[in-house]
Length: 103
Image (cartoon, rainbow, N blue to C red; front, side, top):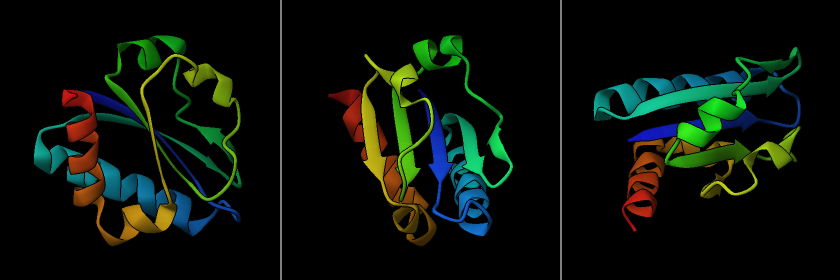
């Protein structure tokens, strides 16, 4: 199972990176392959390529703002959550992703 994710918050500082870290750590524990792009104060970092997106089973968008270049994900199975959801319970967010993939 492979998930690509984008994290972004209104100020683009702490929560963007905290959410990315939480997703990476939790996915690793759960045996899920994940690649996370952050869209913070420094712009887009670890940008997902079209190949990354095409190979993914699901795109997770954890954001409280509109993500940049969202059209890249057209045609992908997308699950959107708030940054807060990821920070509070990243395992629940990833379990929901697993359920969506298995449908």
